[in-house]
Amino acid sequence: MEFTSLRDLSLKKIRIEYGGGARFFAHLVSSANCPHLRKVHMATVRFPNFNAEMRLEADAHALSELWLEDISVVSLELRTPSLRVLLIDKVYHKVLKISAPGLEELTLFFRQGCSPRRGIEIDGDLPCVRILKLYMWSYHTPAAHYGDPIGTNAVNMLILSRCSSITCLDVTLDGPEKVFPEDVEIIKSRVPNLPHITSLTINVSMSFEWRNFGVGVANLLTRFTNLKRLSLHLPFPLYYCKYYGKGSGHLCNHSDHWIPHHEISMTHLHELELTGLTGTECELWLTKGMVTSATGLREVSIRFNTKCWQHRARWMPLSGCCLMKECGFPTATNIR
Image 1 (tube, rainbow, N blue to C red):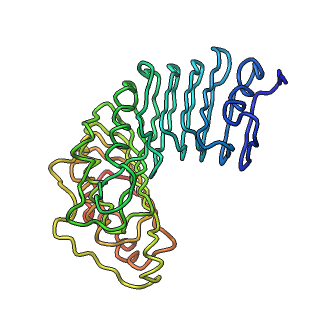
Image 2: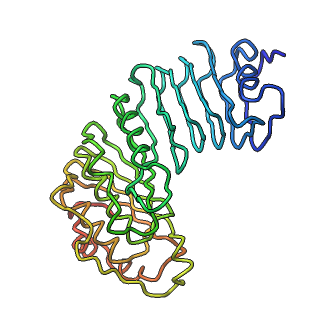
């Protein structure tokens, strides 16, 4: 069948029965059958054969936006020269091949168990990518089954090296619930310096034990020297619900305060956004570490997590000059 007028296709929570599976689907959305198809969004799509191979091809006048979420295929190959937006999240595959020189926005989330086991192949560079979203690990935990965090970060570094024009980076930072002495930090030692990136967003995963995310965040910040905008989004920790109730105290006792101040450069930072704060000393230390060198900071936005408010009173009375002095903000900063 041909669908000559179809421009937008969305398939969610369906199972494609016997009859070719992934290959049949790829043929269905090809340029021959859907010549004007522009957007494809697939989420939680199941094929009868877990060893399925999917090869999507489109000519220069076809597909411009492709989203693939929660799909299992043994091999995924994309040859889409007109593609502008690509999102791959929770796609369980062994091989991933991408040929899309026109990409402008790229999201590759290789979560636990989703990293391509035989690597990723990118045909040439991705010179048009300006916005890149990645899923990174902060620790390698030999004693636990967290997939291959070192391999996942290595794949991310390959992608970063191919995106020479990227200016905006969005990172979801994950790690173990608890950090043990044998765990190895894999951000600062493996992520290169990225001076060409001017906007950074860090989304901290909910899986972290609350007091351990700061090390990964601090080490990630040491990789950037020309940031103009920084957003840090903290989650409501899962274990907080289990071990601590609303209104209960939970003080911090870090001797190193997480932050290597002299290694974080925020000289060019103009905007800082902090969301999900609970008001603890850990967050205060982290904030001070981020703004120590931010002499040009103009605007700060701070939002607290409504589910966890026990230490909020420590921050809220600090307004105007008091808050700027407590956190180290420049006096010209506009705080919301």
